[in-house]
Amino acid sequence: MVNEMRESREARTTFGAAHQMTAPTAELLRQLVAHLRQNRTQLREEWARRITEAKLLTAMTKEEIFAEATSVYDNYVEALETGTFEALQAYARNLSERIIPRGVETHEVVGIVLLLRDVLARSLFAKYQNDFALLNRILDAYEPAANRIANTVAVGFVQERERVIREQQEAIRVLSTPVLQVRERLLILPIIGVIDPQRARQLTEQLLRGIRTNRARVVVIDITGVPVMDANVANNLVQTVEATRLLGATVIITGLSPEIAQTLVTIGVDLGKMNTVGDLQGGIEEAERLLGYKVVTFTESADHALRA
Image 1: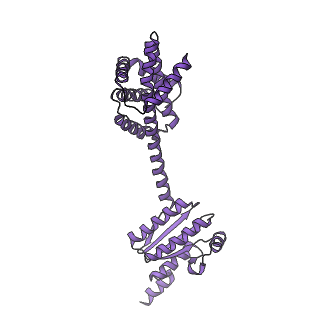
Image 2: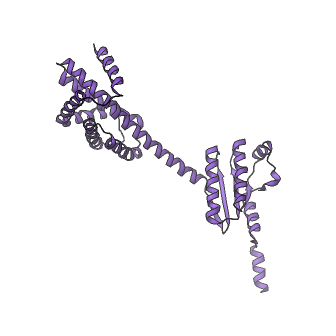
Image 3: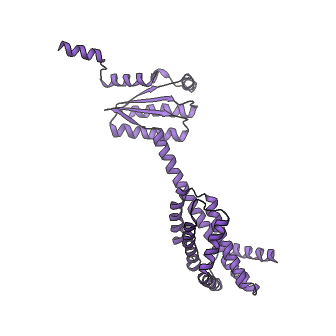
């Protein structure tokens, strides 16, 4: 009998999703909302208790869980009452902003929403257990809205989590590929770690922005800390050198390992056209020479002062 009820509801839910809410459905939802408002205290307490028992939102205190449960419950009921989800979407984003830094995972958010759905469904069974036909109609009206609410909250959390991850990844990339100004018109780009195509593109963009911002004439790219470089990334490096030249700056590559040099040769790069120096110190000295600076040792400086 229970399976027949479920199959009947699922069939009607699929059909009804493409249609606007009918008057009987609206009336059933009004009855449902009235029931949920009347039993608000009992139901939200039951929900908060089950969240704790299921060991969800463990990064939060019981007081915090109850406060959030109250807010989610009220937004849930409002969405059922109005049939609009803008307020719920806004709340879901706000909730996600607050709990993601606490370490709350996606499965926990989905879990608490499903728990609320279960708590409310059990409450409906208890209320309408003596009227099978009315219970069936109430569930038919409730389930599509409950599914959409669960989807709205879950999607909102996932989107916010993805946004946070993207921002963290971007911050890591910026920190891992800093464009440093050593002196006027001279930039250094030390690269450490594996370079994937996405990081290679971001590296090029940062460097070109740095050249324009600082009006650089010479750039030293140090790849001592790059363990390997495939053909795609090597091609990107060559393109970066060419783009830098178009902006009027000269590139000096330092720290070129035999393996990376072999990769460049394999893809047909003429190393004679690339300005390469063995190490970073030598690269800086070469850059200063190109800029017209003269390196004077301490002894030479002292002798000059004595002769003066």
